[in-house]
Image (cartoon, rainbow over all chains, first blue to last red; front, side, top):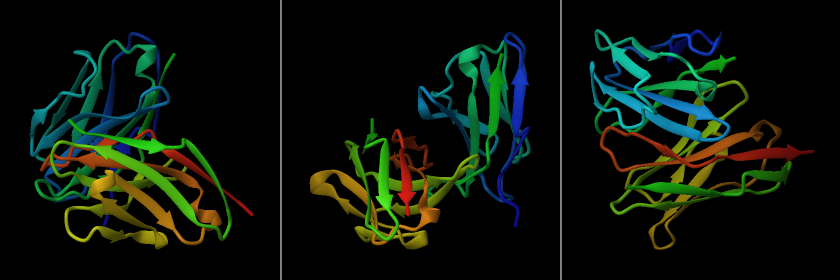
Length: 114
Length: 113
């Protein structure tokens, strides 16, 4: 079956613009996670969803970052007024949820803010 | 709160030699521990996981890891390195039933002929 997919694979944007990153999880996976991978900070947790709700947003670095999930499936991570420090690879993962510790990762979206 | 520390950001190993990647964790409650591998321009792939069953865990591609509570360690080993093992390896921990992961800084493995 299909794995986790993310789009776009690469995104170059100008400082100050808004961007949307999309994640399609594996069908049937109730949990969805966003992580960020950057040279300076390594791999960081951003947010996760149980179904459509996000009980833990503690990793979002600022109020410019938001995410939603609809229909228990697709998720969108939105970054408003992008800054150069937002440049990173954004990784999405999904799992069967509570008690299931195997997360399946997508290939990531490489965001470059110029 | 929990954390993981990976010793050595870069490791060079000869083809056929032992691969040993070190990971130490800190957690106030029993942790679940993982090793992931990342090949260039790809996402993360789970190698193996410890979830409080057997302390010696076998994973894919001939890798294994041993959970040692007394040493707070979860080191990854492979008896004989292959060129295809060249990648970045991440140790991760969670104490959350929904599996939010905290990652180590990663270890880049180079395999020389």
